[in-house]
Image 1 (cartoon, rainbow, N blue to C red):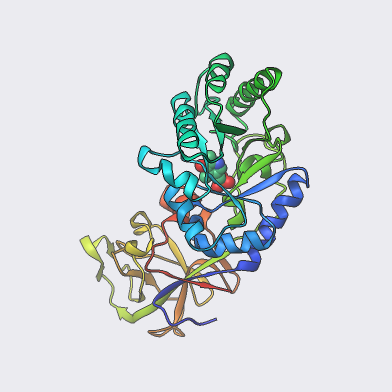
Image 2 (cartoon, rainbow, N blue to C red):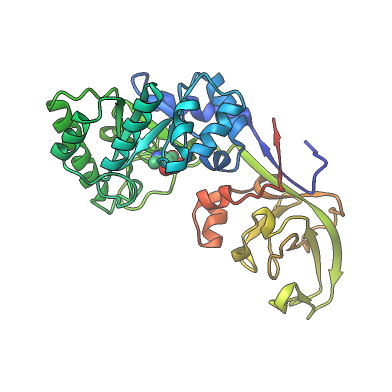
Length: 376
Ligand SMILES: *Cc1c(COP(=O)(O)O)cnc(C)c1O
């Protein structure tokens, strides 16, 4: 489907909907699937994806910041709960209540802050308490008795959920996930044993869903990457990956120029590529400002005329030079594929990430705002 843009990303709403349904069917009806739409839905477009997920019946969305949550509400997303996973800052307190956002609270002091907000606004402020079970990022490391003491003095805010996040969930050579889940499980037991009601308990992102780590599912999971069609590659002796998800985004760029260069010609900034023979090259209208990683210089690939072909020289801000020696059928204005499938060739975010020395998340999130999103 042609679109009148230099570079654009085609996003399949139907594929995202299918991926969501697949996640839901793997975890079963007793487990709530919160759709993670932070970071502009990993480059897919936060509002569009939120609308797709709510149309699929999602009752929870998850974002990183209060700002992302207010964007969703301002755009008319009112029918779902919104979990703000990255916590809140002092200047964001009022917006939590005003926009009906549910913060992940990650310290005992933040429980007190949430309580003060709820008391002064006279509104209910449900929150999910995040436990640092061993990742060493957000989350409280307080003991159950310390938490219970603070809960007793904070009657206005409402503890609705308990959550943690796993650091190594696709790594089956590491004991970290088992250790984290044991720590988290002990905390849920201790709090429940003391009479605390926890409506929602959650610890899993896409990888523990994909690899079937049921003991990490509890009654809610937070699915991000899998909604966009990916599960991280496992390390070690992992069970079979059971999520049948497929990439929902295809990224195209048009050729701005096609030309022939002689043997010995240099290509791009720094002259880091020298043509070993006469070559045909194409200059595509997308560069690192659009999210083509500079690290793909002389290493990455794209698909042109149905075949994988190399990126030549340094990726520049607005342009990327590629080898077109295999074809004479492409002309300026024609499209090449930066991510997706064309003919028998395909290139997904995991493969690109491997060439660039990063992770699929980074590739997807880096697709720039100049790249128009086109929804199908
Ligand atoms: C981003 C995020 C997720 C989603 O992770 P995926 O691997 O993309 O599924 C879940 N939980 C937290 C706390 C996150 O920050």
